[in-house]
Image (cartoon, rainbow, N blue to C red; front, side):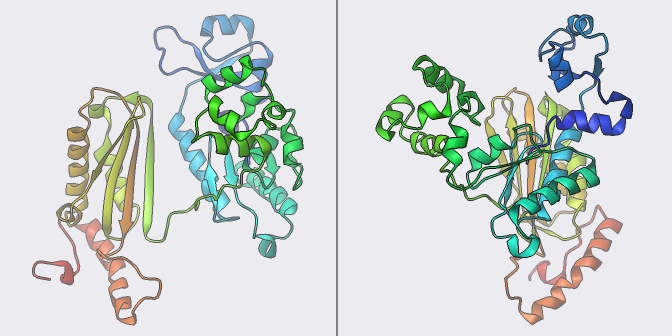
Length: 373
């Protein structure tokens, strides 16, 4: 499923006067010389491209409307797309902004034929969010992803026709193909999927490397059948992400307030807590809370998370993304078949949640988790 130009659809949903006119977002990383960041289809039709200086763009397209970027809203919209897809299938993966790969195989007994299900998903997305979307239906993930970008509402690739459908497609449309590999293939005259499909695996290993070659061969032939992860978190787990745009210095990230909101978004007591963040170089960092941290009040725990983040962000680089992973539930794992005696403990959670909100600076725990338990 692909929602083309999702940021512009969000802007047009808030302001109807923006429809049917060239739009662009201002680049947040070029304050001294304003330039364009994203350009919609109507803007590209008038010759506008990302990176173009704004004064030149306004001369080329007098009707251009330049919008202030609000990437946090876009990531929240991506999360809304994931929540929407969970009603149709438990398996899927959110890809680039406005794009998702979902597994519909096995849902026929609930929703009927797969083509009808895909059409119903598109219609409901338009009714619920007002988003126009395209769809690609195929057993091959690569064929489905490329078919979704065809100018049809729903493009279906029948089983066994994946290689034929992909053959005329240019290699630049292959998702996540490294530019250096694309240039290497171009120099060798391999410009389309069909050019690469008959290349034997040993030769492909020489052109790329032993790790990438089998997966690349399966993708260009439409033989990739990846097992998609779950769209939703496991029961009793939560993941909260925060993309920083533009990236900021560690001391400029108001992590304590954001973590406090996340900790209060679920009334249960945290069982495990891990913080992950990435800088602009893509290097990952992490911190895990100790049992003593987890028994602290939410206000104290939020400050400890902020202090651990600042202590761990020793590289003087901008922070691009932050993620908090939580496991909930009275300090213990929840079994598939619960002991009836544990049901009494589960009934404590709403009362504990009310007490934690009433006394945010004090530790509120069940008696069996106290000292000497």
